Every structure is written in C-alpha cells, then in structure tokens.
Image (cartoon, rainbow, N blue to C red; front, side, top):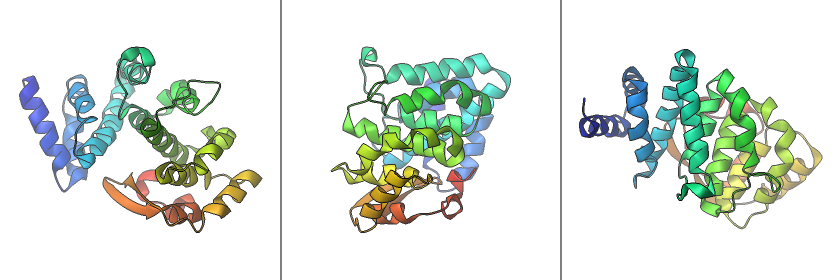
Length: 230
C-alpha cells in the first residue's frame, strides 16, 4: 500500500464514529508503516482526529514493543526529539503520545517516564511554551491515572500550574493532583472547587468539556472514564 493510500485509510479510520473498531483495524496494519501517518495527524486541524491519532500511536507502539522493543524505542526517541529546541519544531502531540504509550506498556514506562516528568521540572527539561505545556500536563495525567505510583513523588511540580491564569493548565493540573493526598495539593484543590472556568479534555475517544471545579472535585480514579483507570 502506498503512502497516500495508507494515509487516506488511516484518516478515515480516525474519523469514524465507532473509534474502538477503527483502532482495532489500525493496529492490524504494519506498525512501522502506520507510525509516520500518525505523526502527521498530530498537526491536523481537526482536534478529534489529532487526539485519536495520539490514542492510535499509543496502541501501535505498545503492540510493537511487545515483539520489537528497539523499534519502539526509536519512536520514543523521535517523540523526545520533537520536544527538543534543536528539532526546529514545536512538538505538537508528542508529550500526549508519550503519556499514552507509557500508560500501556510496562517496559517503555520504566525507561522513559522520568523524561516526560522532566518537562515540568524547572531544573530539568522544562518546557516554557504555554500551549505545549497543556500537552505535557495531559501526558503526565494520562500516565498518572494509569500508574499513579510513578508520578506521586512529583506532585509538587503541579502546584504552579494549579495557580496558572490559563484554565486549561489549572484544570489539567487539578485532574492529576487530585490523585495524591498531600497538604499543599489539598489546599490548592480547595481553592479550585469554585472555579467555573471551562476547558476541554480528550477522554475515551471523545472531547469532553469540564469546569476546573469539576476536575478539582474528582476524588477517586474509579470516577474517571474507563480510559484513565487501566
């Protein structure tokens, strides 16, 4: 199958109403051929297509890692490179895809979770671009809801975002911080419980609108959509 034909097939699958079936079909295609089209859809103007490409990348790379770990590592390194200043790009979709991949694969998360978290570390690989910070927080949140023990020790890094003037950053930080029980987290979440600013989060194959307060009030992972409880 040629590049154009493959790309056309994948975008049609990403656009189908029944995304669960589409995802199964994408995972049946040759993984190393599917990756490049999925990368291109991270920049799609249709937000739902972009986010579903992130989900598909997670599934494809996790499956690939089960039988070809080195090829999966190459893709992870490509995602990391996209977030490097020297890459010349912005890296849209890359932190989200990193979180999605690591939520689903034990070995990859062992090797790369610290890198994803380093993007919110002032002394680490801190990302200053505010719009890209949203993707980083979503990726960390995705990881935290799947594997909270890997993020718990870094909950304090979420505090500045919980006081951000950007409601998306506040909401995403609260969505993750709510998982962890510490004094500062409780104080900041309490402040957000009346925050009626809205944001849109991608959950379970759909874009959902929440208020910051709704995310701050979520108390248990079993109250979250299924995508974030595995």
